[in-house]
Length: 321
Image 1: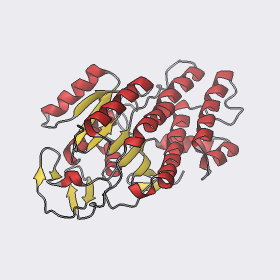
Image 2: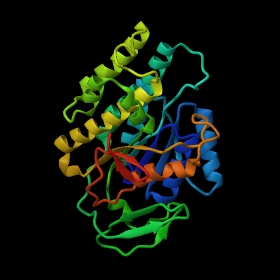
Image 3: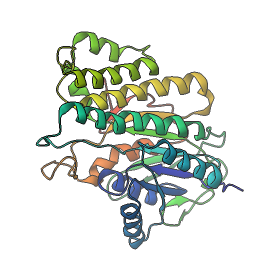
Image 4: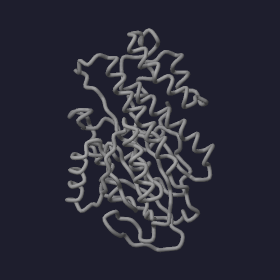
């Protein structure tokens, strides 16, 4: 029998921003937190580090470029929990500026992970997101030492803090599903360097998922032919993939509103900012913990929140594409 415990899951969580998000959710989320990583040894080492801090994450291997791996995770969640409450799509890659790998190969590899991998995870896991329950409405406000503030509402009970999650007793019956796709402000900058025609397509309120996938494939195809600049694309593989993640999030949110409007699921894209990680380098101004603040804020939006939904969030505020 699946557990009735709530569950949050973070992809690409063995280091950097993903690890900081997982740590924060272990402290603040009422339920189990699953840390996923492509490399099992590194993932389990990350879990052990959090356990040494008195936290209790679970581990599951996940390679977002491998559909079999994604489906194994899906089956685990379905069997263990019967659903999913919080999904943070953080996994992603970027080639270093000095990397000499040919541009078209960088384009194909980065797109496969950042866009197609994120999309595949959503395709398999979004159907597991639990609908919002009618019990979602009394207020708990907590601010931890890093300044995260979240509000939650409970109907029937007063509450005390329990366990290492700092969560209210009796909270397990409250459901508020949240999806956070970690994108990048680099996607916004890159869009401004695209041709007016491409900008118009990406900014369209009626763009379909199929049309977006076609544009992402066209970028890779144009890069392979050596004509991407002629076709209106800028010289950044990472930036184009993050345009894709941000626009995909808007499309997914629209689908949720149309198909599951009564379920109160909120889905957003966000940027953690420029963070000191292996990917962004040591000169970035933000720590991983600071980079985690906005993703965690979105993951813990209160059950009665009506938004944001389908937005791109920077420093907890909506940014227009």
